[in-house]
Length: 153
Image (cartoon, rainbow, N blue to C red; front, top):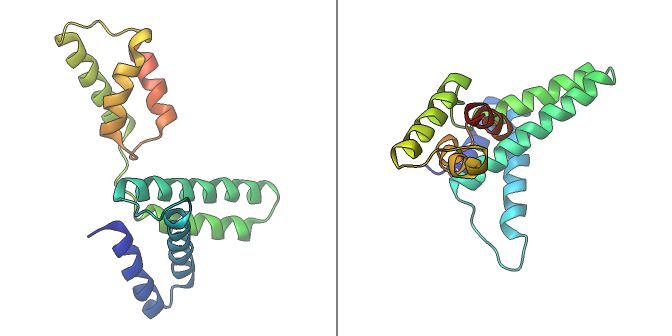
């Protein structure tokens, strides 16, 4: 089932369950999706990969906002933001562990070596492209970059 359809079905489920936080969060996310689809010169339909990226950004925004609230001493508001982030993260694919990402990076580097290339920092892009495609939203991109740098150094 497409991710957008799942979100729309869950609005009804959260209404029936009386889960106000989840209901409001899913509605906000659907609103953001609608805004993205209708913005621009012509309307578009976001695919699941684009929706996953959007959900990651929304969850990250809420975690950052929660940190700001915590620093300001507004713990109840921080808790609400974290609860919303958890609702959003439930729709994201299972995250990879650091060890799994390191194994993916090593496999890509080994594949390049078999193809006759000796990857170095100059060829970081040749390593990053297939790794990023395989990881695709299941691990932090900045950390992936750090792992690739460490393996190529």
